[in-house]
Length: 367
Image 1: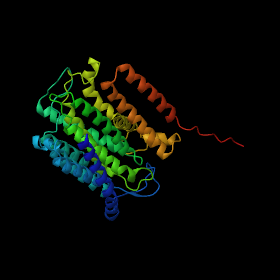
Image 2 (image 1 turned 180 degrees about the horizontal axis):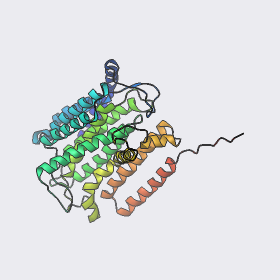
Image 3 (image 1 turned 30 degrees about the horizontal axis):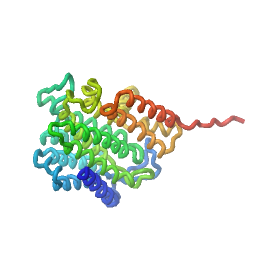
Image 4 (image 1 turned 30 degrees about the vertical axis):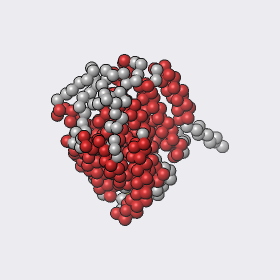
């Protein structure tokens, strides 16, 4: 665990220290988010935070190569080099978009290329935990790998609408995924908790912790597309590298055979459920309104919380609670008896519902 703490702290410290420098850079190059109808900030805010995040992740990778156990990951496979290359690619893509907005097709093409780069370096789905272990032809698996990258990057981008929201939700997702992948790795033969998935998850936790002090309301710097695409890609990389490594026939420390069969497939989805839900609702909402699915609007989950009367910070914390409820609840099924997990989820769900109900707006009586 000491090496994981070193990776996490390195990513956090470098990101934290680099963020003010990146803010100055953003101001110089004109990467500034103007105030638009759908926005909740009242003054222009610089954006380009993903560059600081990339520096933090790069520092974690450089450190990891020097560590006794994590260093073996670099010797055994070029996967982490591939993740770093893809991360640099999407951050560059997002940074260009932050300075001078790109069209949606160019951004999509960049995400596809980044997913292909990861697959080329071996970070790709090898099997699916469906009907035991299902292995499909390699072109199909590479296509699915790229699809996961595209969905994940856009999911994080969609939820990035309030100060600290995306970074906090990704932090919760990465922490839940780290806990699951770390404990599951103990069941490997031979047991080995030092995997690509656990390394990336620890680094992402650090990156988010380092960025949040600058990004929580009132934010001094937005992560921009550079940060949203980077975090989405890193979460996808952790998920992809882990999903094909879990044998559904193993116990996964769970007392339920059904859970052992379903968890390798459902946990990655559940951990990112909140951003996925937001993106699905946005596509349906815009399509029904006769708009293009990628056209921005003011109907996201965070907008709705603000509309029912929650303050900026309270809305963010409530979405943290919902993200934690879903992610931690899903992971709990792997290590607790089902009735304990269900009871815990029910209690948290009741709390979340009560807190989410917005303060009642007092009606103004007429003369």
